[in-house]
Image (cartoon, rainbow, N blue to C red; front, side):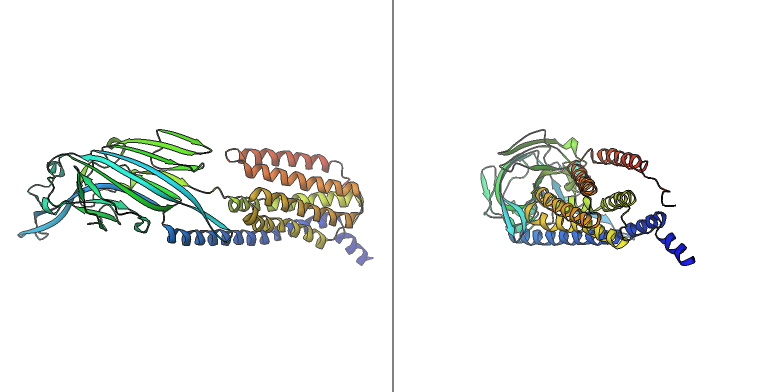
Length: 435
């Protein structure tokens, strides 16, 4: 009699719901493992991209030209006894700077991974006014005008594809690799101002042919800076601290124009040594391939507990209504089928893209669960409800994943509606009929 009572207690729906609830929580562990797998695939994808970028040329940032003049000044020693000579470099930015860029993008593939690279033709034109050393606050500074030089910052020197010449007041100047100092740029090219009269206005121009990948940027170093970029890439993302004053984006490409003055920056037109950082005046465009299946797969995994919980609830309702016993192990198999969906979504998405992968994975898992439910219940009507639930859940998740600004709102409203439906369905269940 006691054994029968224990068996009846273990078979009660209250105990079954406790067991199933614990099982649902336990099955969250595989969902975390799937998230780790997605992170690993993202890391692998980034590694492959970086290898391709290293062979072609990385993100390019062009800045300058900047006029640099070495100086020496006599200062008191730290001990206060005697004078010491300090060396430094004064930097003068151009009065006007106009940048015209044409980017020719190209897709490159390695295995299943695809990246975008570009060939850029960049023309820099502008002018320098007579340098005003009095504004540098370097009293008694001795400026070595004979050792002055121009520098142009280029972030990835491997991408230079021509032999550029800096033309100053009609005079062609030889370009040397590397920067004369690292106060402003870590890499770039240098032009020695041998024989130039630097104490007069100077007009300059230079043309650069660059290979780069994903991103192209310039630094607005002129007192007035005008930047114009064109490309036949139809999906640009404008980056940096300044947005274009006007832009046109069509299926055939984009054009964008920027206008920046020195008042928009937080540094002046001249200073000494490393007092200011010009990188804060960077602007440009990203040429990204819109591959977001990894991000969407990661977002979808976070809804695993919702899918498992709702499926367990509907199977409990079916179990009570049909008087068919469903073993906790069978609940586990249904949950594992739901988790396999995310593995399928990630792996197929790498081959076909997210939307088609989602359709294939959802149809496969829904068919599998519906077939398994029919093998247990032998009731077409109940199986139809299971299939309808799976279809509705996958449509609901797909809608949320496609939304950006309204994803939270749509998700919250959807969960509220689902909860209301479950509450309504629970009213049709005679919870104590077993007793």
